[in-house]
Amino acid sequence: MNTENSIQLRLRFSKDVEENIDVVRQKFVDHAKVISPDFLMKIRNYHIQFTVRGEKQRYWSPHLSIQLEEKAGSEKTATHIRGLFGPAQTMWTFFIFLHFIVAGVFLIFMIFAFSDCALKQPFFSDVMVMLSMVICWGLLYVIARQTRTNGYGQMEELEKEYQRIIH
Image (cartoon, rainbow, N blue to C red; front, side):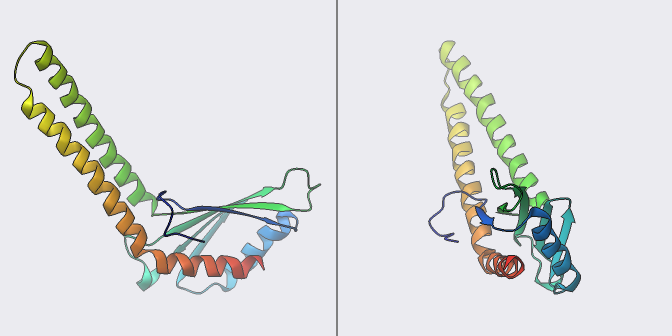
């Protein structure tokens, strides 16, 4: 998977396997019993959460979320696998929270700037706060990209383990 040229922060992939969905799920169940202690696999119906744990786990460690679906028109003989690499759910929630705070402050000061402009009052400070919020958005993006870059090695480990399971 090419991770360098993608602008999206949560990498997605999909794969079709010419095996029944229950057979593919059973491969994951069987592998979960013999998996290395460096990995954690949770299986709920046809959804699998796969992550790094133990001493190798860091705040930037990636999580692999896999969804198994029956491939349309295959008469239940093929499975469509959708995968999503992303940060820990708590980290993702924190980043989304920060984005909402930045967006809220931006909108509030945009309203202030509009009101001050309509009242012919100085609105330079409002525009400066808005500009600083745009800079904050840029910083959040750079931090998210750096976090993803830190997790490349572990992402490749998770992908190798996933490939080992489905083959």
